[in-house]
Image 1 (tube, helix red, strand yellow):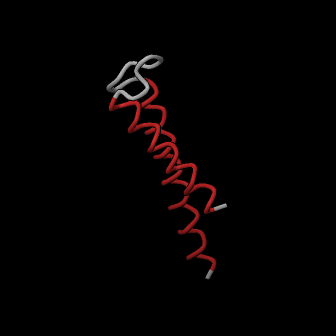
Image 2: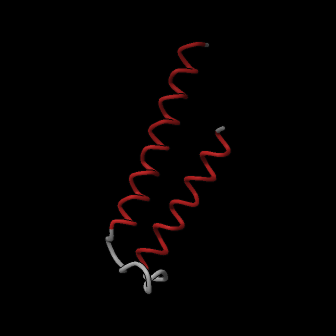
Image 3: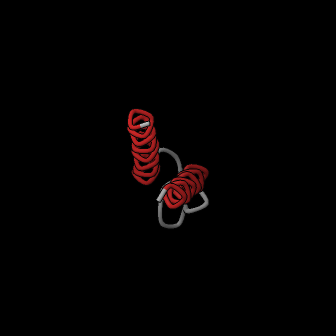
Length: 61
């Protein structure tokens, strides 16, 4: 599960970067578009979830 979340986070960061730079320009406007904010939010949720799981594991040990 952890490796899958890391891979998903990496994909979201890659899409966010490509969208910001303007590589996806024919379909999505470059810059701070909704795609950028969606990917940034998804990445933040993954980071917070992983941090919460690590704290739970530390408390159980």
